[in-house]
Length: 188
Image 1 (cartoon, rainbow, N blue to C red):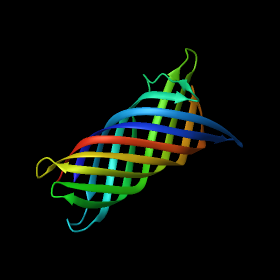
Image 2 (image 1 turned 90 degrees about the vertical axis):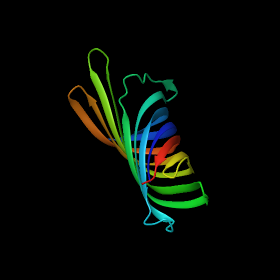
Image 3 (image 1 turned 45 degrees about the vertical axis):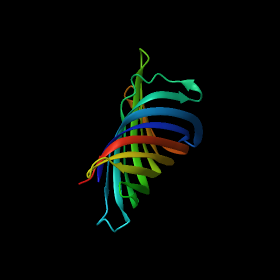
Image 4 (image 1 turned 120 degrees about the vertical axis):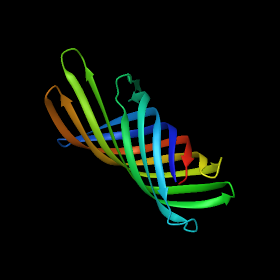
């Protein structure tokens, strides 16, 4: 089954920038909206276990860093992609539930200019991810999907740049992200 969905994501995390022997903690709260494409593969209808994948592209609509509101108007789109082991079970003739767990990878960036210097950063991060959804049949091949995805960060890297100089550092993260979604799924 393949699906297209809109999502609304609420994230809260603490990120640790570890560079040159020191560590700086930053609290981040972020809200984003976007589109998601996902698919599932089960070898046949009798097989409850299979695999799934997902791709999300979203726009940050609100962000707080250490309690201070950030201007999100020029934050570019962020993307993430994930692969999951999945479980699917019929609930009734017209509905089934699906759940999965796996890994998700994300990339996001931001650039700002203070009039004299251009600052930018790019983060590539990895997460342990899980999702659960219920699918209601509208027709034999079209379903309304309602679900949520949960993310626990593993870590990643951040590249910080000022004008033409840049430095890369590992980033440690802790926290939780929850992304509820509603969409239309097509089975074929």
